[in-house]
Image 1 (cartoon, rainbow, N blue to C red):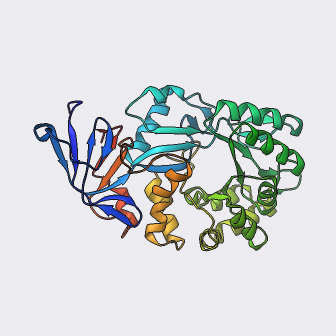
Image 2: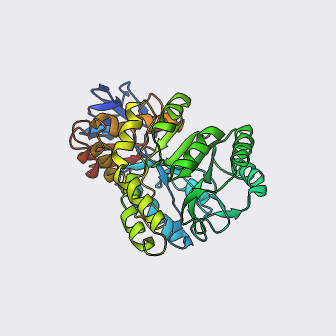
Image 3: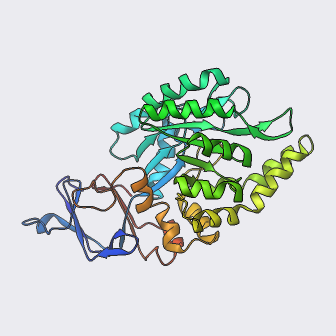
Length: 364
């Protein structure tokens, strides 16, 4: 398609979860609601429900099961996400340098959280900067300066001496690291499977909690009051029974704990949503999970009880606002996905995009 082609979006164009306009145009890579003059000869009509590009708020481009992957594999990961309609990724911790992606007009935009910060031998090998508590503040500042406004801290993991999930950091150290990252202008997100680490993260000033399986009556009110976001990663939590089965004979307490967290996952998410906690969709793609699962994650959130339009919003307008990126707005970059039916009525439609437009050009 020539670079000067104008796309006529004949809509409905969904500018918000409850607001649609009949039509819009893509001109010079940007959205406009004013009919351009003198372009009919190079205009292409696009029919269907038009949404802003979807958001995967917990993704790991450049990460494989054993750490860093070659650039050609990272490219494939990014293309898979793009073709699923994900045009904005919050890369929630990666050891790979993926800045080269920023120079590719055909790959999604990425908001990076730097590299995971984890306790020594308390996380997956080759993923994180592994360190002891006395080094956490310095590393948090380093990642705040090198990322795109986020820092990722691993708050808990199995403690093999205890045989169960346990917090990785003394609360005062965690709080100091967050204060230092905030001073650099970054937000901090914390990986938390269990209850204790989640309490520590909230008390320390976390801006977001990943997974948040341990959210309960003791922490829910504080999480809601402080506006701490939650990214449940339900397609990842679905793997907990397999993790428990592998660990059961050696670590039976841990295995039982993981099964309980899995069993109550939908109730946990629904309690968060009903309490006004900001909930966003993230697949945890990368590592051992496939990319391109955003439709499945949104379907899981709807299956947990969120109304379809609310489940959609976790990966759409609300997620973009949370990440401080525009949606469908006048003069905004034209990162759009077109669907054959209204996904507000049935989120299953997200699995079948009919057109993906990135930076104003059709790419799928």
